[in-house]
Image (cartoon, rainbow, N blue to C red; front, side):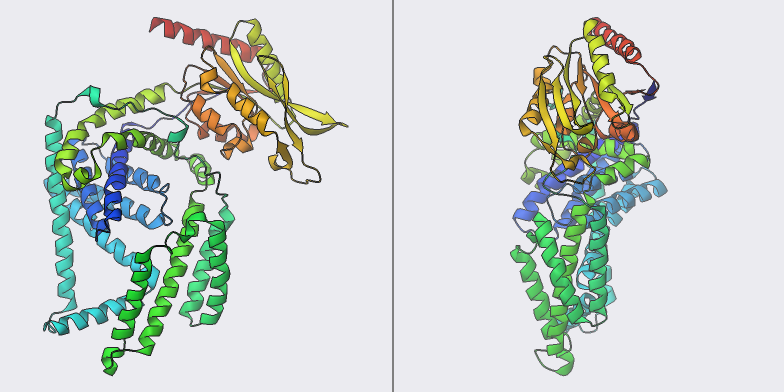
Length: 583
């Protein structure tokens, strides 16, 4: 028997999860009112509140490294935003956290370190916005800004005012704003330490299938190849445009945009926004009036108009390209790669933070109060962070044990599981679930029947599609009624008096969040029920890291016997019963 011991987030990651859940809640609540009322410099306002939050938590928890971790977790939470473009905001959030962490590391956890970190964190919002606009519109955007500046100073009679002075003034304003945010955060942290904690007001944080950050969107099919193709085509179009090959880039763009609008459901969201078109029209007008026009002494420049139109063309390509790239970045394969690369603690922390969001959003005061009274609001709710950590720790300790029966395809996993179930029933173990029994015709497997372990009744689960040469599960037609019946068999509501549940199998469908995946998420919220999975040998590690489970015990059918697995399960069950009785 092989044991896969779970690795849980340490204290720093747990605290980062809490900070990230608060941060994401503020982004949702404050961001909604900023968006609805079309308030300008909304990014700066969100950075301002983020600095208050980071500083207040640094005052409470003087733990090294929690801020950059919180920024990483919050940035990953941003990836589930319904917004079409997520890459830029994710970089912005993580940059703010890194800058705050850096200056606190250099100058210490004191007011000076907080103020300098806050200054650069808020300033990063301006820099991020400027870089984003250059990426979208190209370097012609800088020319427009320069022309607009010279026109403005000429109109107000300040032609001698250098542009660098204006830049320094803006930098100063943003830096002072960040310092003020840090001071407010310092006050919030100090006030929160004086608050009396009322445990009765704390919501109960529970794990369920809805709280799984890494669940797959069934309406979106993902492809790593398309991620690379979309990026390559976008770069090629911009390259052709930069070389002046407008016709070639236009032809390629038509096919590119058509593909994006057909494949990605949210791709038209930006193009439907009136503000987007107002912005494009504004840039075109400014370019027409100011680029070359002032030099030539006319109010309209054809060359300026061409520049403005090309900038708008570039903007549409970049925005739509990033919509496509952002969609593919949500690919669950990234989760698998991350787990194999040793980043399981990061994603566990993200799942913890995400699980707290629904209740935390209900618990937070209204968005108006959060936005206009951040100090008193945060000071009142910050103390509950300690209880949220305890909720996280409790949830991890209650994760269910998993028994995996591993082997290759058609090697005998189901036969092993059937013998195991029979032995356990004889020993009085109350079990439920199902097995997937192979159906053969002329010595060829043509499908599976679902076998109810309680009644022994077979239900047709899947059959081969006619003429299919696919080698994956997609070669089968699945009986939806049998699938629903299987889900009901392992639904927590029907397992009140059950000690053990069998799921045969947990395979490629489940790892793509199909099949029994959501039912497994539900089961994982019930730590008192041991689960037995049949899993292909090559997928054991991936399966063990996909759902929020405790210790995983692997019985390979090549080396183990059903009797050995049965004795182990009986001992596990009796141990749980003794523990429950003592409590």
